[in-house]
Image (cartoon, rainbow, N blue to C red; front, side, top):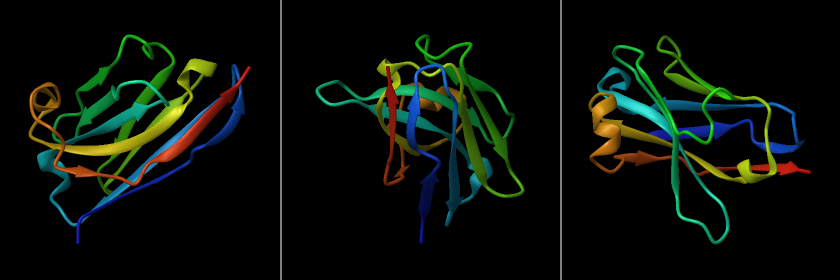
Length: 124
């Protein structure tokens, strides 16, 4: 059974930090780029960041560059998103997703698998 299990969301004040985790199982981790989308109420879904499990290359949306850091522990099949200097506009449901292929696939094909989502709320 394929699973992407997220954890680490919550409520934090502006300027604070959170770390999201995404534990993957049921598929070959190294064959996928794993990352995060987010969706705020009334807004379109946004690709936030991803990492290639095979070579460690990364992508960040302009809105989070310099504040968020994605990393991968391939031994644990887990991807982390360290979010620092959080802003109220970062408030959203964050979804872990797995896209088959390398980093280039992230921009081209839809994710094969999705997590259930975790709420991140940043208060001003």
